[in-house]
Length: 334
Ligand SMILES: [Ca+2]
Ligand SMILES: [Ca+2]
Image (tube, rainbow, N blue to C red; front, side, top):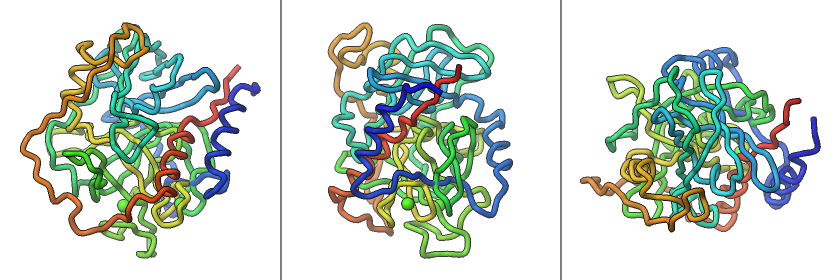
């Protein structure tokens, strides 16, 4: 183990200090065997989800991403925004990111605004793994989702306490959209329901799914899938965790997570892959353009039958802190 990464741990600890212990939390049901989640993560339907190893000027980090074209990886804006190098490993091969772009409306790490989406262009096309199919509709809510990534693990009782570099997948219900002020809701919310304890439910049904699961630091950028009847489709990009009840976003029971909604960004994704949208400062660097939403015929009323407290300063700090924590201290293997 090398010293590299120390600075990053320090950054995360400072951000967490006011409201969270520097121990993180767990992500699988405490009454299920981990092998079930590992096996689901290894399923061929989710082969497009790979591991992102990145660096900024100050630290190395680990995150996740989903192959959506032979040479393009969809991930979170906060994964690529400050990166100085990015590698993507999928199907046992590591590819080098030659350029990347974060959504230009992702500003000041405001994860609650819902523009946490970005792309990485690879140095060579991936030929042995099929890209994920992006979802084009708006009917995500009420479906069983499968979240896939390389984040930390643990159980709902312990929180995310272990980084073992394994790929896992688990299920959750797409309960609600996060009520942002945007013209279309662009964040999908899920909560980690505790078996036998309805008080550890933040919204939606209090009954956990068989492989109930919550994303944890390191999962950022990974994929959220739903099978609408014609195979798994990519509906979300893992963005943040939310300590909605205990104000500690450690991915234990009662916590929630947010995914950036893929379908409302499909035209932005297409524009970025065509080279029409480039982040300022990235290679090729023309000035970034504004988002280009598909307006469609979406209907409002998405807040539905639950209420989310007004985002307090503390809540926003919490989400921002987890965004930083996603840059898990990454042990460089020698
Ligand atoms: Ca749930
Ligand atoms: Ca918590």
